[in-house]
Amino acid sequence: MNVSIEPVTGSPLIKVTLTNNYLSASFYNFGARMHQLFTPNKEGLSENILLSYDSVEELLSDKSYFGAVVGPVAGRIKHAQWKDFPLEKNCGTHHIHGGSQGWSYQFWTIELLEDPDVIGIRFHLEDSVSGYPGPINVRVTYKLVDHSLIMTTDYQSMNPTIVNPTSHSYFNLSGEGQQDLDTHSLLVNASHLLETDKETLPTGKIIPVKELPLDVSKMQSFPAIFSSFKEGLDDCFILNKTLPTALTLTEQTSGRKMEIATTNQSVVLFSTTGFDAPFLINGKPMHSNYGLAIEPQQFPDSVHHPSWPSIELPPLQKRQQETIYRFSCL
Ligand code: FUC
Image (cartoon, rainbow, N blue to C red; front, side, top):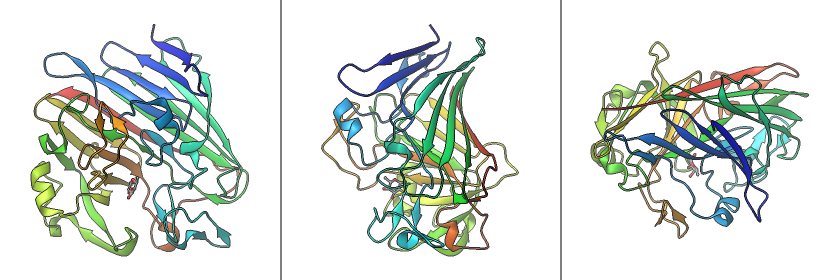
């Protein structure tokens, strides 16, 4: 069976599982979330390489976007304001990740793909509750193709609005969260980083990667990253679009390697530094540096930086972003 769809007893959740010869991925209708992703290690043992809630109740009360599609707009919007439209202040005086009624917290409908040769699933949402002008229609398609998971996000709106979606999976390539980030290494094909202030809002200054305390456009171990970025990573890197791969993450004990390609201009990386919480993730309480959230997207808070690429969406204009996650072993 390549595609299975099953309700989770006693909850509003529906779980979809896609399986091919190399990968197995499961998703929930709640936030069109990626829940688990199984890939083989260097011995051929297939294990989950996402940070995943152990309990369905905790998943349903999630506030940290585990595996979720984030939208309409990912990241912080200063003073929760776009033009004349006030947005929910759910991050101090600012707005973040589509708000408490954003795409991550809505129930999406599920459509089976008609092509019997394709292992994939499509989620749909008509968003009129997040507080953004709309309604915004969005569909997210996940497909397994050989060693890759391909995620495509298509969207359009009835009225002028802003959209900048992302996927908010936290990766831990060791398998089942056996190690922390310190056994991982990272290369980002970035040209620049967006400088941020104390509230993690972009200041407008764009710093060349060569001027950072550590040049992450070369493969760097996480111990080296943590000794240069003292507070860990919660940063937006502008991608060097002449290169096909945006980012490579490897893990030494399992031998796993993940390469990401994306149509987006940037990627936000959040190393979960300082993120300690009592809920169980892969059998352990959530803790600092347990995983890396990799969030391909357009620049955060671009509505307040007119010279940056716009995320404004005119009525009935169709937009699409695609991200490919490719897995192999070292
Ligand atoms: C990332 C970060 C934020 C926040 C959220 C849960 O996107 O940029 O700081 O903690 O995840």
